[in-house]
Image (cartoon, rainbow, N blue to C red; front, side, top):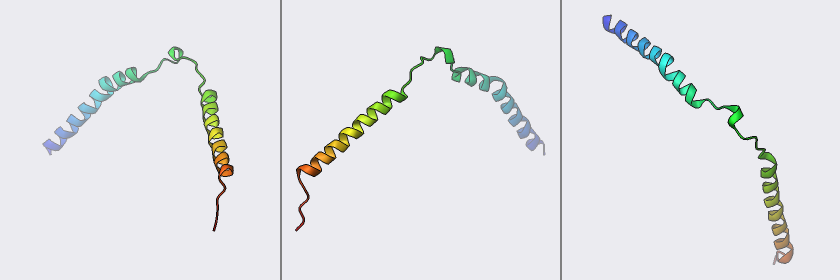
Length: 73
């Protein structure tokens, strides 16, 4: 029974050590200062790039389709 209680105490000590020392350090490292981030809007350029490639792909497909019609025998 003493070994079970010792294991429980060791586990509690490890959990307390994590809560008191490790977790605050990890939280400090993972904090991101919102004011230090540049305010860049990437949605519009990304949308334009994807839309442009899609339009070029569709134009190429239509051009290839009309250029050489499918022949069935």
